[in-house]
Length: 280
Image (cartoon, rainbow, N blue to C red; front, side):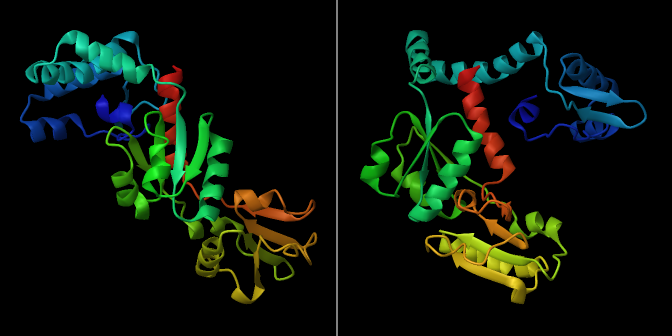
C-alpha cells in the first residue's frame, strides 16, 4: 500500500504471483491470496483472470483503504514520539504548525542565472505555487527558510542541501533525455533550416551534441544566442527552431518551433504532489 501510494509501484505494474510471494515469505499460498483479495477490495490492485494481479490504474481508494494507509504511517511515528518522551499535545502542536504553514513556494537554487530563469518559467507553466530563484549563497537561501521547497539539479544537490535549513526539503529535478525526445522529429527534410536558439549557452552545447547523436545532419543546424538582437534573422516558413520555453516566446509567428522543456515529466508530477497534499 505504501509503495503504491508513493509511486514506487506504478499504476498498471504487474505484481508477483501468489506462488512467488508465498515462496519468498514462507507463507501459505491461501494467505497471500487473501491479502491480494483484501487489497483489491480496498481499491489498491486489480486481478485479471489468467494474467495476474496489477496495480490499479485509477487510484480511487475507499475511505477504509485511506484510513488503513494513514494508520500504517501514523502509528509508528507516534510510538517513536512516545519513546522519545514527547507528549501528545506537543506532537499535535508541531503537526499543526507544519500543516498550517503559510502559502508554500518553490525556490530554484543554481549558480547559472540563465538556467534558473528557464527552469522557473517551465515550473510556472506547470504549477500553481509561487516559483522564485536565487543563487547558492547562504544569505540568499536563508531568506526563504520556513515556507519553501528548494529545487536544484542533481549536480548541485549536495551543495544546496548544506545551505538549506535542516527542516527544509531539497528536491533534485531530473532532466529530460534530449536525444530520445527529439528523435520523433527525424528525419528532417534537407530544405528545412534547423536553428537552435537559447539564452543559456549550455543549452546550445547540449543540443549540438544530442541533435547529432539523434541523427541530425550537423551541417544543417545553425546555433544562435537568443540574447543577441539579430538571432531571428533569416527565419522563415521553412525554418524549425529548437529552443527553451523562454526563447519560444520570441520565435516569429509562422516559424515552426520545437520547445524543449528541460524538466522531466516525472519531476513535474512529483512537485504537483506537494501542491495537492496541502490543497486537499
